Image 1 (cartoon, rainbow, N blue to C red):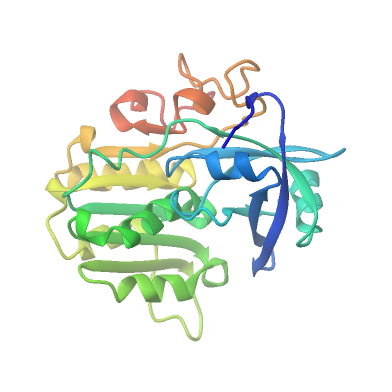
Image 2 (spheres, rainbow, N blue to C red):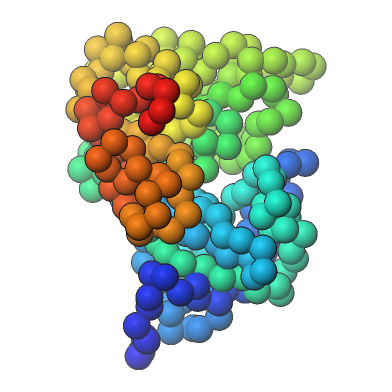
Length: 281
């Protein structure tokens, strides 16, 4: 296999091979690089992201949600929030887009082998951790007990309910879901995702913790977990910022000295403890 040099600045052509409408405002795309050699050589770590480019419209950063060893397609989940995402929402299988990546630093899964894991997510912030869950599911024997905590504002915002059901059926996997606003048919917790920490079925103090979602939710989760005895160094977080170049040139995602696009998006909590939740960062 002779793979040509791939520039981080030039998009590779990718074809949409699958499109799934997850909710009225959320959809998933399965992508395959059009160059078969490049597709076969493409490698990423859970937690990394791609820049997806819609020709003539613009480019957006999107987390990769598929398992790194599932080479048939690259999964991405997108919420419709603006002009570019609306353009992507109109695409269908067979359409082609540009793709740059992968970029950034992923989750420390090699260091987490053999340990209990607590995964805390909020809203579509679950996307950067879905790749972690997919990774664990395919390698269940390599990790200890797993608690998956997911919170949403409204029960209708909960996507992938069938996946949560399947994950909850796995050995030593506990799934806890919460909605701030719920109604008929909701059998899970009504309230904040942070309130689920007390329901975890094992001692969280020795667990490796991974958190992603809206920043206020992440900050509240970290405070709850550290109050429960989890050391700061055992907590990792994925940040969202305005990433336009993905290579640390444009400065839009600068977070103090680090750049989220290349030094993150996954950070160890002590690295960002002084800046997390501070206005201006």
